[in-house]
Length: 188
Image 1: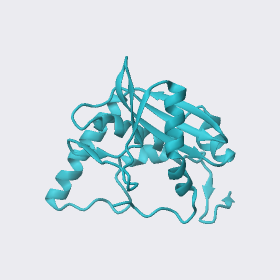
Image 2 (image 1 turned 120 degrees about the vertical axis):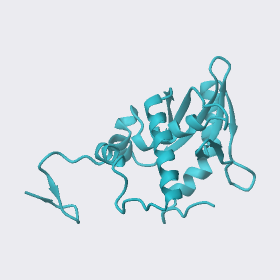
Image 3 (image 1 turned 90 degrees about the horizontal axis):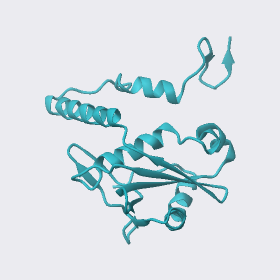
């Protein structure tokens, strides 16, 4: 079941553009790309152990074997500059998403590489990724703890898991000493 999306139509446009981006990635990278999208628009969900994913496509390189391919559309140069470091680095949430897809792999074996394909303003940028094994170990450990807690009937903390705090701090870090109120006006 697809989760409800935002009210704006950028997500819709991203989904509509996905086949074109996959086609362009196959041409630019000169690799085989197989979409994960089915005729009805759904994606195949794969599981390896306790973790699973759906991804935009599988990609195949004769030297490296199978990999995961995730496409992203950026419709705003401000977002490109702020969140993608001007197109030099993918945002952490996209890196984590691709790492999860690589970890799941084909459902039996993980993939040893992946690509994030970014489209912005008619330009494609590619981010070649290798496994982050320490992150994969965290995936495994946290999934085991989560399912053990569910089995034991232990409810999670209402404001998130402490393991999320370092990542949230990196994603939404504010300079030390700065206070931001609820409407975004900076206070002294």
